Length: 166
Image 1: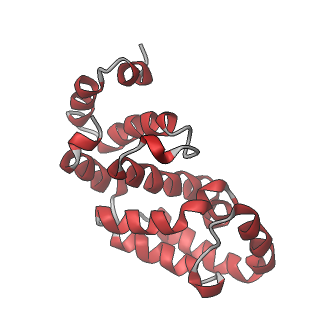
Image 2: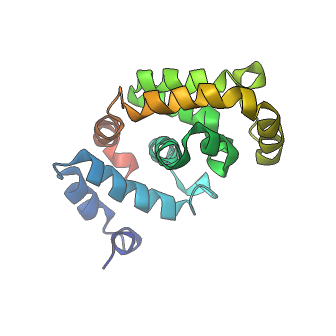
Image 3: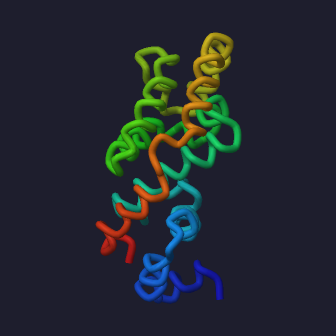
């Protein structure tokens, strides 16, 4: 029985307790992120998520994209639709250094805010990419240093909002 089956069958409290007892925060967050991603159809339907679940999903979206292709890829892909929510999510969990890195990456956009609409953002992305890439690459490197332990911060956040994950 997979993780999603536990949650689907109403066993999420039992499984959540097991996840929250894990010693490795990164493994615990990966398990929770997998469940929340599936529950929300990978961000396409956020209506099924509580606010704390959205925070976890948004922060993990950023982390996946940056680790896979940097800020350039993040802004190009659908995860860039949630730039504002991700920045708020980072601050919510206490990842203020990571939030500052993202804010610096956002300075490449007009009004320091990437368009929420993906097509509009991609069209603008093509226009700013040449000037933005050097800044994004610096931000990528700063992000890879993990000045905030995102997994540990998310793990504590989940513990504090356990009822919203049950």
